Image (cartoon, rainbow, N blue to C red; front, side, top):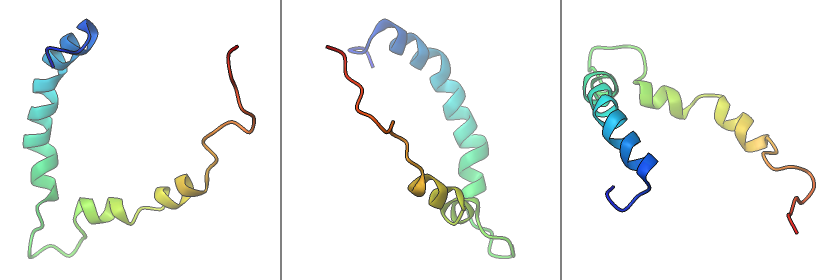
Length: 69
């Protein structure tokens, strides 16, 4: 991180602990499967979500080549 740009360093130092806390307190426990639960785990639900098919079919690039001379 110390070799990155000033903005990247400041952003990492400011937002890094917040993202780490959110991951440790919200995301990580939510992905652990509960043996007695009948609903799929959030990770499995994300992997099976319809958005993946939509993004695979979408043309994310412009129809013409853009270049700067």
